[in-house]
Image (cartoon, rainbow, N blue to C red; front, top):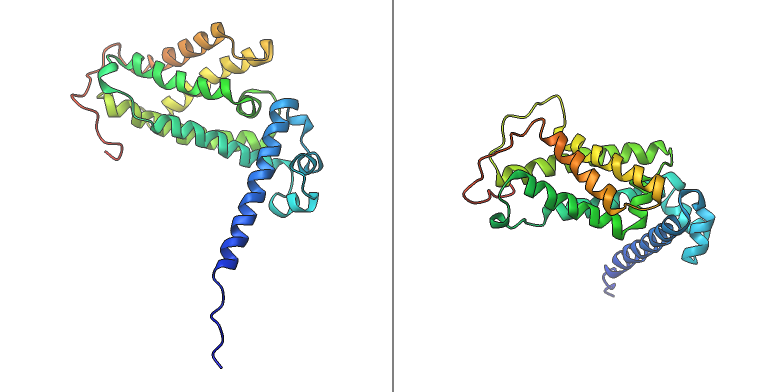
Length: 220
């Protein structure tokens, strides 16, 4: 008697169920974070919000730091995606134009995502989140460098300083100050943050950079 072949659908379904649980957990954590802040997060509050047993949350996340790190990964994925969207080459006349485009894209994420503001800009003192944020910032700085290099012929940049990362982090400090004072990034502080971002870059980029005839490919 021939035995039926083992089903291959079961592992896929199990993975799909697990992924669905993870997404529900992170969505619940994101909502709590956005509405009540980091202090509101616990495995039990997230489980209650997601309407699943706490044991299911513990199955995927050992504690709140793991949840926050996963959310930080999601936020930075959005930042990476916004940097990867092509910039219209004809609309960029100088490097400051490009700086404005990318910084406004990042500001849009902060303005539309309260969880991003809580994780990146609020004062929470969570070492795990801060370390994850710093590592992601280094990756974003490299992407930002590539974006500028795509449109302009950059001078030789120092290899002992992450110029684009630092420029981005300095702008974030202004936005964080606005969150602390006003609970949001006000238009005035948004402008100041962009000015800080550009001012730091101006220490390494001359006022005029030769613009490329056409943007180079992303893998150049």
